Image 1 (cartoon, rainbow, N blue to C red):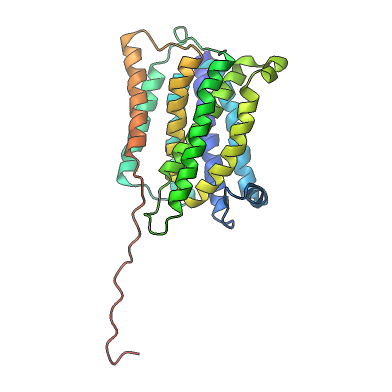
Image 2: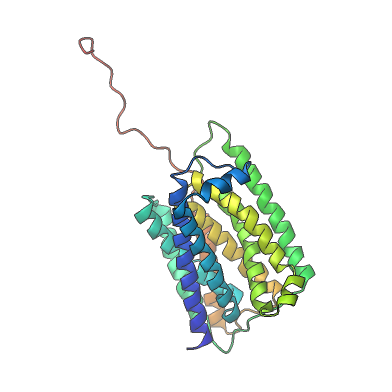
Length: 304
């Protein structure tokens, strides 16, 4: 089987594992007491007591393993276009297992995602797409460190706004963007690891394992608190879209991968990426407050 086919298969497997993992974690979090990023040790003690949450974490970890195989066989931009397709699986699972309903705009976003996936897959060609494996460490740090700082700052700002009592209920867009930046850095680190392995000394001499530890620690705490407060059917798609766009744009530049030269393949690749941007723009920033079925009626004088 061609390497491209293996890469596409591994990407679809990673999508499934990620979607299952997020949904299981969300379902577990709905049954747990409220968690807070201000008490990370308490948060971890709470979640590890849930077998359902542990099952979700194992699924997510397995998705990272599949992602390593993807980055060894597919260009970064193409891989991200396929990863976005995982949003469809996530939305279907969240509706089935979590009872979360999608809005009309979110359904349009699903259609855009499917079209983007098809375009990116059609833009792939086994012998024409070069896969980059190495990037200078200073360049990776120049890209990743400011992105980590931006993600943490955005999350802290979202936390401050969420504490306002009269604010509209958030759908999780701000949280999703913040966590998406962290996972974007993690995705670049996974890409770097895939190019260094199996040279273990070179791996630990690179910044990649340390970036993974940093994003893993912060991402775990931040994502769990956000998942408990917001709909998985929106926060995860926003997070995934930001991660994919971040990795596709900055990863392609950092690892020296070029876009297709043929006009048709280039158009397909760029249009698929543009549709992924449309997914994020279509997402509403606030949930509509639920209205009671009817107004309370006044009691007549003879009624108790």
